[in-house]
Length: 336
Ligand code: SAH
Image 1 (cartoon, helix red, strand yellow):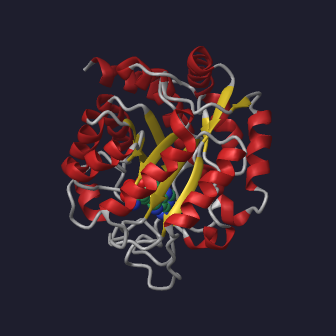
Image 2 (tube, protein in one colour):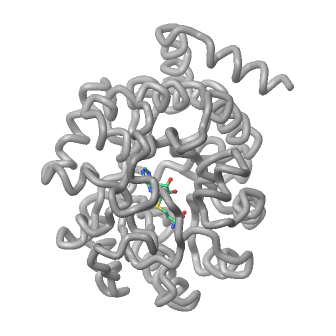
Image 3 (cartoon, protein in one colour):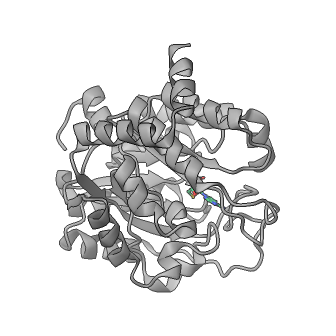
């Protein structure tokens, strides 16, 4: 009840007051630093029929690609030598990659980075057994957004799968010792203000180490093509509220936010986000990982430079360490 009251109180605060609080919460734990995560989108093949997603089975008009383990290792080596210390392996739910394929990739990456680097997976809902194998192979972190706290909307947009199962996956990941990230989309069909409040409450209850919030952006080859995109002001306010209530988490200024509003990246960094995720995959595939149209890494060839500009505009600096979440450090110990 206390969490709920606090969320509702912050939700009603004028933006200026809200952002003053979120800025100081971020400064207290993360100073003026921004961590970089090198994002490798390894495959746009996907078995899932999520109605919001441009690489789902609904999209029959997109060329599909998958990176080979060698492509992945090549990019990790290249960017490790440039100073990157966190790598995120994200993709569609591609049946061509077996658990042992992933475990080989994970252990090769960890051989390159040693304990200086962290490896994040974003592979969707897998079994507990798979999560355990990946952890034993050396994976450190896992991103799995619950997407929406409304079980009815969830079922509608995620092909009759259950929100409860997605939440269970998050508990499984936490119990295995992963630094765990979750989050949600803003602007899904059927959503009300109350849904957003409940999204915030659920995020807090899950006690994650990382949080990603993005606006929903309609993709023309999906059933949600006519739904308007999410409201960036709500994304900013939700980010600020979570920074205040979960101040020790890592929170990215998400790519989707910047893709619909070119000021959003620096604004989000100013009001409490502390992470950016530059795309480090081979350039010929960037356009094909089209979760939504107009992704900034496809739209701007100088997206990385734009990130640096946003960091500067927000009065922050890049921190090259692997940057564990302080929320995670407090739970499990270890070095950042
Ligand atoms: N298959 C993995 C990775 C999905 S892509 C999984 O399901 O977890 C990562 C995130 O992109 C998703 O969790 C979703 O929140 C976001 N995303 C997908 N489609 C989107 C869209 N149309 N607009 C904005 N964000 C989207």
